[in-house]
Amino acid sequence: MSAAEPGRVGAPIRVVIADDEPMVRAGVRAVLTIDPGIEVVAETGDGREAVELVRRHRPDVAVLDIRMPGTDGIAAAAEIRRGASTTRTGAATGIVMLTTFGEDDYILRALGGGANGFLIKSGEPEELIAGVRAVADGAAYLSPKVAARVVAHLAAGAAGGPADRRTAARQQVAGLTTRERDVLALVAAGLSNGQIARRIGVVEGTVKGHVSSVLARLGVANRAAAAVLAHEAGLTTGPLD
Image (cartoon, rainbow, N blue to C red; front, side, top):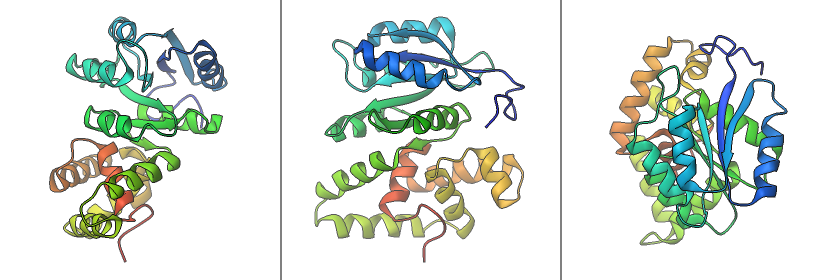
C-alpha cells in the first residue's frame, strides 16, 4: 500500500508510541518506519506523557502498551477520548493497543474505553503496519489471535457456556439486514468505510450510514466492539448461513 492513500493526499500517517519497555518501543518504531507512509512523531514510556504527546502532536494514531506503570494504556486511551483529541485533518486520533497473551481482561476494558485496534506484541511486523494503517483510515483492527482470545474469554464467562454465547451473538446479528451483515463482516475484517464501499459497489456515505445503523442495532459503542461481536457470531467473511 503506497503512502498516498485516498483522502490523505500523500501525507504520512503520524504516530505516537507509548511502551515502558525501551526495547519493545524501539522495535515498534523500527517496524513502523519501514513503511515510508508512516512517521513516528514522538514516543514515551509513560501513559501520562503519552496523553500530553497526543495533545501536542495531534497524531493520526497512538500506539499504546495496554499495561504500563502509573498511567497505563487503558487510562491513557480513555483520557485521549475524553479530551476529544483530533488529528490535523480534524479526525479523531485512532488508538491501537499493544497486548500480550493473558491480558484478556485488560483488552475487554480497553474495548469499553474506545480503543480502535488490538495487536499482539509477538505478532508479525506486517500486522503492526496493517493495524496502524487500518486505524488511521478509520477502521477497526483486531489481530486474529486477539479476536480468538477475546471471544474465548467472553464465552468462558458467559452463563450457559460458549455455545449459549455464540447462539446469543448469532441471534443479535440476525436482527440486521443482509446488507448490514455484509458490512459488519467487512468491519470485522478490518476494512475502512472507503474500502467497504469499493468492495460492495456503493458510495462511502452509504457505508457510513450502514455502520452507524449496525452499531445502534447491536448496542455497541464502536467498530472494534462490533468486530468482536461479529467474531462471536462466526460472521467474519460474509453473511450468516
